[in-house]
Image (cartoon, rainbow, N blue to C red; front, side, top):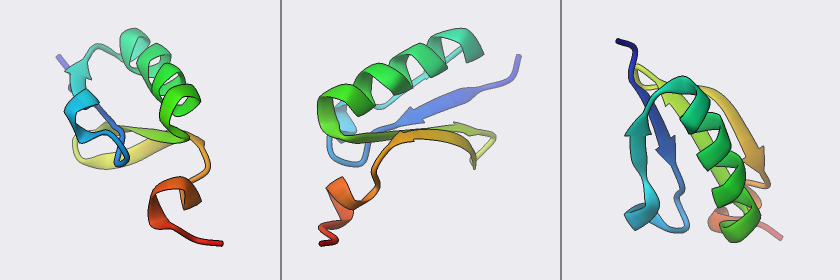
Length: 59
């Protein structure tokens, strides 16, 4: 089974590992709530939602 990690830098307590379908749904939901989230497969980012500036404090 392939592992998909959902990473939300602004809310690390929300990070999860799950199947692919759940990962994309969760990623979208977290990006709506916290501004940015990404999906990683085997440690590599395969997609993201939102604006990374929300946790990098870019202006």
